[in-house]
Length: 201
Length: 367
Ligand code: SF4
Ligand code: SF4
Image 1 (tube, rainbow over the protein chains, first blue to last red):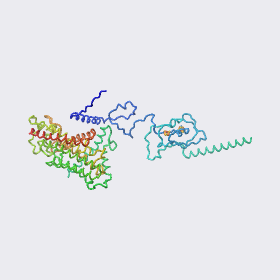
Image 2 (image 1 turned 60 degrees about the horizontal axis):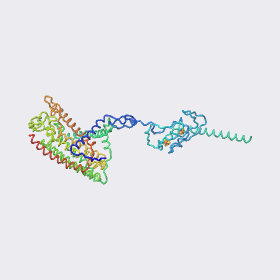
Image 3 (image 1 turned 45 degrees about the vertical axis):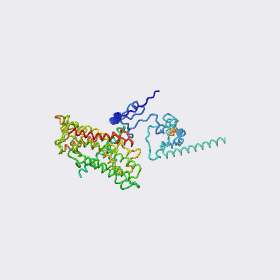
Image 4 (image 1 turned 90 degrees about the horizontal axis):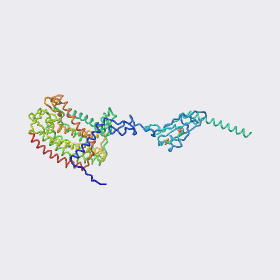
């Protein structure tokens, strides 16, 4: 390829012209500062068609919408949770803590018809540990653990980053545990009786 | 005493407006919004900043030269503020109308340099010292082209009195004692035979009376940017290399005074440019035959109307120049030290010398 020497333009008028064009540029931006860019998401058609105007987003008052498949704060719809513990097992950073208690009676079904058999006296997600990988939402059989579009949830006290999703109060949880223990005792007694009867027979 | 308080109050007001304008203008030129929270459109931001500064602790570094350190901000501000004493605000209002105003102004504003050096030396900090040395080198150098540009205006006007220079640049010229029979000619050349004495307006501004002063004005404006340490000549303050130059160790009230002095300097150099080159408090509108725009927009000398018009024109011209200063700051990159000295000694000073010569010849054509 033929190489051409770059000729540096010099001279008084050239410098004056370039100084003036610099001033013109800032003046253009100053004039256009009456307009504001609209807060649109990057996939919007208009996003790149707005070269002028102020780009500032007054954040707490306005925000750019988040993408639909964005991964932000988790939410667990505990009514639909069957406490299968899959999410806790798959979580790479172990930030989900689940304790389960077997129900002694029928406790209904989830919204997609799966039968619920367990109570969850503890269902905590530590959002400070969570790496927002989204694995838990993929494994959940009832799709009850989901990502919400909320991303602004910083806290002064890190303990507040642990979110509690259980719907049982500690007393209720205690009651359920007692019920379960009693039922298991009864079942054990029934089993022992049945065993004894078989031996005799 | 009254003039002192009035000038101080007006200056504080202008500086607060300017500090706010600087942030907004900078923001708009960079597609930002600037302050928006304090007051409507953030208009109380500058006031809030001042209040914050006043509450801050007044820290004097242990190793500083305490006397110099404490005295410097006051000296710097006093030097700049004293310059305002000779600026005519209206046809009838000058804080101190002395006959050698121009000379006094150049002399007293140079004291600023001593204050800067005191601040830099007294802080006992290498950044401050470097900043002060650069600042002094720069100001002392640029006073030469600025002084020469002012000299050419003085030669054309044949006066060191700011008020007389102001009167010469308008339709009210013959009202000034001693100028009753003076005449203004278009471009100052009597041979052209167009008498502009009663036309006034922009045709009698110094840059029109002697068009060579337009060059002098540009030289003065560039040099004044350097004298007030404004970008693109802000190497003494170079935030990115010297933190903030000579005032790096200052905090609280003393910093506020330095800040005030810096912005006052900007206002002062623009006022001087307006008075010497852009027609001072005179209206830009000329009398055209029976449409006496110049008289209508000047008021009657000595009355409230003339004070109002005078201050209005003076301030609006000053604000145009101040806006230009802000715009330059946000447009051009900073000069290197050698480029700065090159511009001053090898470009501006020779041109200014030539301008002085031509202005002298021009004056011969004017009489
Ligand atoms: S998003 Fe990832 S890290 Fe966060 S709780 Fe779910 S599995 Fe754990
Ligand atoms: S995977 Fe879903 S259903 Fe299972 S415990 Fe987690 S949230 Fe509940």
